[in-house]
Image (cartoon, rainbow, N blue to C red; front, side, top):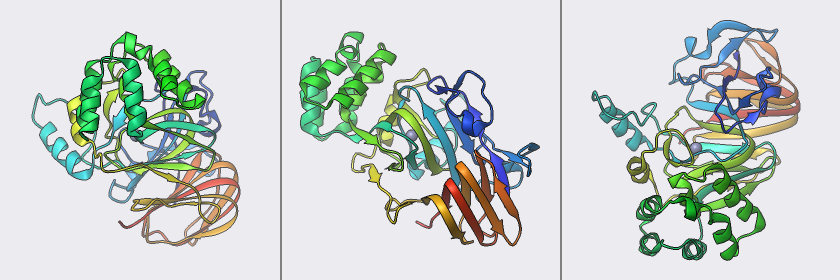
Length: 360
Ligand SMILES: [Zn+2]
């Protein structure tokens, strides 16, 4: 059993000091993500019993095969990019093609990225495909979107994305909230479109959000996003669990490179996100998911060997005991156990996220 703290990412969409309770630092600037894992994009430092960094990172002790999951705390003040993550076949082929000198660098690794966002407070997202009638009403109000409407009616969702990217002018982006209102959407959705237009007034990809469903989560609820499902997290603080990959192919709402054709090719219009509400009080277990998450507030729990396990203290106190070690977690630190590490027991008073890999 090893203990890590998160590697901080200061992306510009983060919240000022938004992750300070878990990062252990108050920089006075944006904090967007804390990474717990072995991905080279954000290697997690190992810490000792006092919470001080030892100078090593988790990846010095384990390779990516032993640590199949990446866990993040995420704080979003404004919408993240409209994005899609590749399935394994798409990632493997894209990664191989990218090894040719001069090829565009689209992917970060050859792995699938499937993710789940667990809300730690109110959290809003665009994810999956919006009801078709609603989209058609919004498109009519935006004007000039006949091609996108035609593609949508023909069940060509990738074509509809492409058509919207082609007409994403400032004038139409400024109409997003009006179009949402005309389509009869609820006030929180109209506000979300206003947020998109205010933050990205000249981002061609802003209109793609018209195609996406709106999801509002309360603390403890989660959304599972299989690879191939388009999404954009709008705002909130959450725990994100994913396969150990940083493959993000963007369609808009970003200053980072957009690879529209590659993103459209990675779409899986037949897949939907799952809204996951806890069963038995605290277990979040999406269908066909490579992981299961338990949000334990109090009591003792056995965490058996045989799977990768990471226990992240969100608030309060937690003690983790096994034959090999006994650890009191500090807020924002996580105990990490490989599949062949012995059974462990966690005793929690507060909130600890227990994440385990599963066989698919
Ligand atoms: Zn994502």
